Image 1: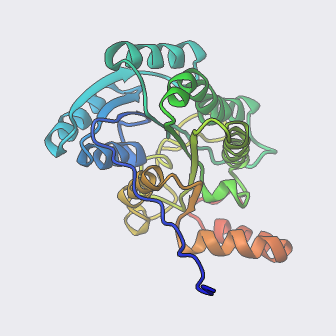
Image 2 (image 1 turned 180 degrees about the horizontal axis):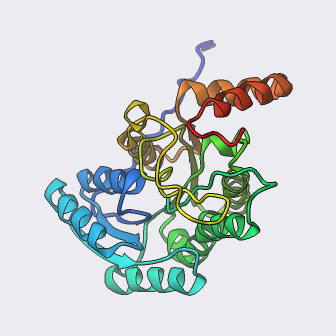
Length: 283
């Protein structure tokens, strides 16, 4: 009788060469880095953003890095019509889609008592509804190809951040949406992944909305000390290759997520103290 345990099977990386990848918010930050990471894999890219000039610069570098072809499309993901047009143009050009990366997003910084409700609506329209719209319209092609949809959430989608009620709400909503979609499509071969970055160096804090809906213009953090966008981008590519369900980045993120399950009151105070030390903190 053979008493040996069966060997564990390891999922082989999915080759990405020639795969058609749509990335929203691709003109800067995590989206830009993700475009470069998929370009190295020799993918065909659809890059979407509100800034066509920045997109063109990113597209040029993607071609240098090995992208087979790059299509740039101006798109404000808060618009349902714009998201449908984005997917229609991508499919009209390439014929189908294999990977969707929902990355486009904006942030905000204001306590709820002072915040105009329009600010929270704007954040939800871009972060959450932008994810819903793009996923909905891309879904038939992703299902047809047994492809991947990955959304960028945040550690603030695991532990709420004070002064970012709208932002945290949008990131929690994205996680719930994606988790539900994963279960809905269990029998259809769709890969659904979520990435939870910590503080990442980008312009998202510079463009974050204040209580009146204006850009705060200056980041309250030292961006040079934050995680590079390339780390998030590499995690997204690896998630797609290995068809993993999620990735929490940074030790801080893992600890906050784990400890919050057992000592939520303590985590509340630690998060409050951390945010209170930010430059021009609302607390």
